[in-house]
Length: 88
Image (cartoon, rainbow, N blue to C red; front, top):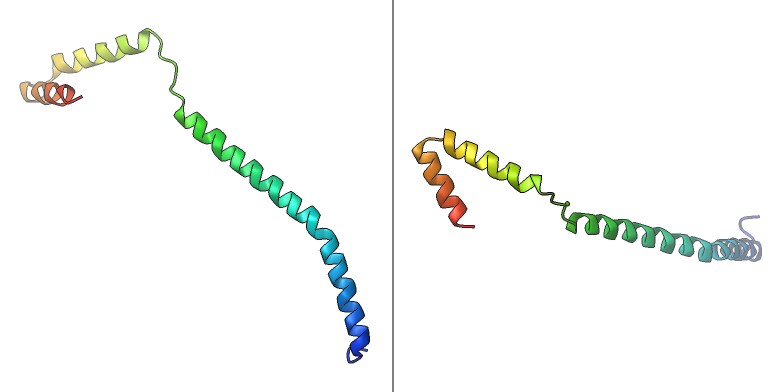
């Protein structure tokens, strides 16, 4: 049976028809998955670009911490902090 060239040609043709019939559905699914993955990547990127809301307490807390560190630090540490903050 497998040596019959006509039979094998018909089997091969039928297999190709079935595989080809499924191709549009598979390609559509791939496109949807790629779009979804790209959408998720873009949403994650957008989230990384958003800054958190700054309330009035945040800068005051940071300034209080800076003043505390300055008050408790050695003269060398204070100088380093002043020098590095001046570079900003």
